[in-house]
Amino acid sequence: MKRLYLQIYLTLVAILVIATLSVGLMGRFAFDEARFEDMITVAGELAVNALPPPDAPRARQQEAIERLHEMLRIDLALHSKTGGPIAAAGRPLPPLDLEGPAPRLRGRRGTWLVPLSDGRYLVTSIPRGPWRPGPWALVALFAVAAAVAIGAYPLARRLTRRLERLREGVDQLGSGDLTARVKVEGKDEIAALAVSFNRSAGRIEELIRAHKMLLANASHELRTPLTRINMALGMSESGGDPHRGEQIKADIAELDQLIEEILLASRLDAVRPGRTEEIDLLALAAEEAARDGIAVEGTPVLVNGERTLLRRMIRNLIDNARRHGGDSTPTIAVGRMAGAAVMTVSDHGLGVPAQEREAIFQPFYRLAGSGESGRGSGLGLALVRQIARHHGGDVRCEAAQGDGKEGGKGDGRAGGKDVGSRFVVTLPVATSAPA
Image (cartoon, rainbow, N blue to C red; front, side, top):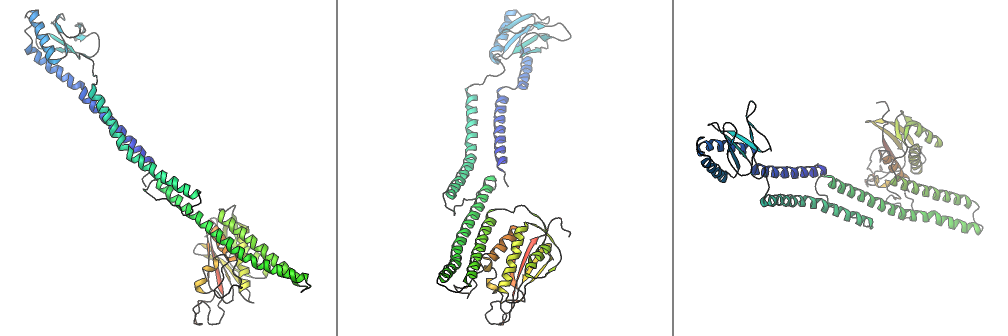
């Protein structure tokens, strides 16, 4: 992934390198001290031939110094073997000090002493300081600044343009357009943010759609017990069946359970796993099954989860098996397979057609052929899947005795023979559980 901070950092480094090279090149060509010293040495060698001999008149030597000054454009001063001044041109130069092991200059910096082969000394300096940039230097600096600005603009504009599109997508989502998505460009943090936004928007759209379907189905399912209650109340007022009160209580309990399941389904959609603990799945299943006199087989296995939710998952599977398993007693087994905790709840009813075994986990799904008056699965199996996935697992439905198709319809029912259904729940094993 091309990190955004690396792009910005490398851009700044490139700017610094360009600026440093530009200033360095200007300084290199504007003032090179080594080249200047070489020039002074050459000038000294040439001066021996260009200057009159030491015993020439001072006027002649002064004339020669002035001629060199005009040619080289540097300050010059000629001294005798004893250090006395002979001739000079340009600005005054510091005096020559011959005391000590070697001759030296006293005074300001930037002067050079060149001993000549005839014993005399030539003193020189730069006439106007080490370096003063002219108009061309300012033009070069402005050109470098313009080049950096032009080179940095496309990158900055590219980054801000993608951020603007991301902001527009957030505004669309905030205004209620749940289909709003942004284009993913590049492989940096902004692209990762766009991917995260699209994923979040998709999740929000999915949750809103699921809640709308849940409310629509719930409103339909709630009408049935409410209608029965109204009819029962009307019959009881007219002196009907004295046992109608018990039916009313059952309908009210059904309504209460349905509302509770709706609230639990909404909570599981909206929140992440809460406070968990290590739970022995076999013991929990046995405790819940004992209420219906059902024995549980298997071996203990530890899982991490919320005890209340796992208990509700087991209860829903037992209620579903008792409701659709006929007069037979459901069988429950708990064990471990491929590093996961596995719980199976089997019944001996008519079974579920193979093509509908996934659909029955949808809220209020009705099996094909049940008719409008037939009762659907409500939210029981939908909650089982939600709770299992809430804990990092899943649930599936399969035939308890194989997919018999002797009946000719291929619906998972063995030619009039009850094959039953098996619901298999898999959950991650607790990290502290023995292998």
